[in-house]
Length: 327
Ligand code: 8YV
Image 1 (tube, rainbow, N blue to C red):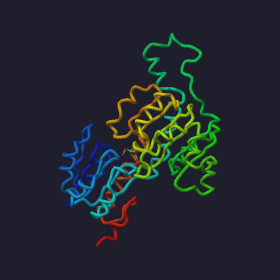
Image 2 (tube, helix red, strand yellow):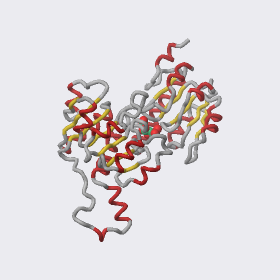
Image 3 (cartoon, rainbow, N blue to C red):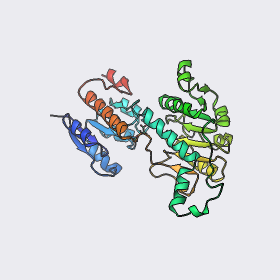
Image 4 (tube, rainbow, N blue to C red):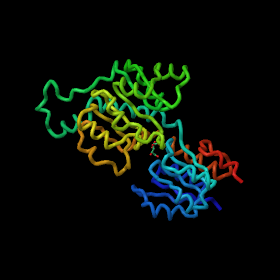
């Protein structure tokens, strides 16, 4: 008998077909998530879960599903999963690192350019038939070329963002838990390590690429925003919760920073509606990794992890190898 798995969201048909040859599969075919209680019910008796960063896998859910053996998250970030609880329950947890670095870095630039050059705002104005009102100062924005780019969180995606800044003749400053080796700094357009406060003060534009944890919760709040330049653009492609959204809304409204490009929000998808009142915020629904090749690669990677884990092999991207040594 094949192991039973649950696929929490609609995914590529070819991935469902591949999974079906290994597993007895129950897959969401709708364009909506299952409500939490229904999701919990459907997960009962399943040995594998194929999920995205949008599913919250809590300790309670884990305890309620004693048959579960592998949780394959189709995302690099895994703060949606209580990994400690999974480890205690002997459940392998996997993610999809690396395959999305370049696509997510591209998207950080899309948001940075759109926010700095007021793309969304000006498009709305054009669509509203306002072009006759053009003046010399219509939609003046900030330059990126020659500016100082700040990167908070200099992992693989941060470095991919920094590499792209070469083409804009930018200087790169970064702050990270640990300083990069010199060769990686050189590869990241000569990125220079600075303390966090200095980064906030000196960056013309700041991109957040931190993983979310208790330690990074509200890493950018009122005090940090107060250090930034009034001409600065802030981009968050990392996770909601890294920024204190109420403080950011106030800073944008009072023009204490110029603009923001935001792909992630606290409590998404139920994000703070005050963002919608701000012309100087470009808002996207967590699509940083959403290119066809990258989402296919992420899905294939999550499937590889699930297939390996449920066939007694070590999954390539196992986050909690401690489970392998449990009795
Ligand atoms: C996910 C993400 O795309 O990889 C991550 O950490 O946040 C995104 O790439 C998306 O939520 C699908 O799981």
